[in-house]
Length: 250
Length: 198
Image (cartoon, each protein chain N blue to C red):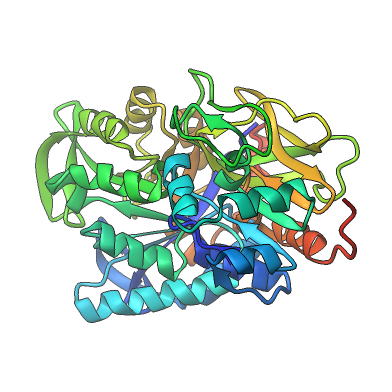
């Protein structure tokens, strides 16, 4: 049986890990290689790196970060942020990413998902779906939260599956960095609409939240602040989940 | 020696082998595949893409012979599936056809692709694979062990083949290079095998 995955996320800008609230107010949270290695040692099942650099120089630095993290890491590495084309994805894969996530570029040009799946395989193609609550449903948010679209989050998840995405990294814009708990209704809506695995993100404050996200249908839970601040280790979180009866990799 | 299959996550495979103590190089030349002491056949992507790449490089026969002759070969993920005759993924595309049968898709009603860590249980006689958690990323799988092969099983929807072993040939449906310390230890066991009992 598949185990519930616990995934620390590193938002990386210009070679440093940063963390913000609702995608802004960024503050420094450490060195990506050291953090990734520490999380693996604690029992992380996977690492996600999101490049939040605003400049081409920053993006070039991200490839170097991926290369350096890859040398140390013996668990899967997903990289996203600013991926505009199949060639951008190829560069990250060549640097050592195992999966690449796309968000804004796929909303602008959904065929990018077909292209990525055809060229690298669907297991390599992750749709990062940022969703904000709107009138009892959810709308897709792009450009790191700067732009709300009219796209319905559930319809977009279904379309992405049809086009070849292999996994959905689902972030609640409303909960990101707030520690108010995951949006479990959003998770249930998306996980119920697709056969793809769903990684829940946005709002974790402790193991109870992660357990709720998993109970709502997520296959994996992603968190950043609670790990970077040293409040919870991955091992402590997994112990809690195991005590709640969830199967985790020990 | 790692075979370039065109679509594989080569950087991870190479990094994983280096962590396990191997000195490795990438190649897609027939002579190298024939002569190399150990060959790794990685694979992500589709059977059609990988087979057309192997055919283009003239590697189909060399790889099939290595496995048939029981020379040290490690196939990873799609690499395992390539050993079979065909796959539901690309009907009409022939695999390396060293092993009989067809690779099939996970049954309806289970999360597909399977992405994540799953419990692996070795079959009797397995020399390399030990019980533990391995990282998988696949939509297709092999349902039964071919005659003369041992290996390991895992469950997702139903029970299927997580690894195949015969002598120094090891094929893993999971990614040993991404399976943490357990995976590194497995790679090390395969790398340190001394003789090649055929």
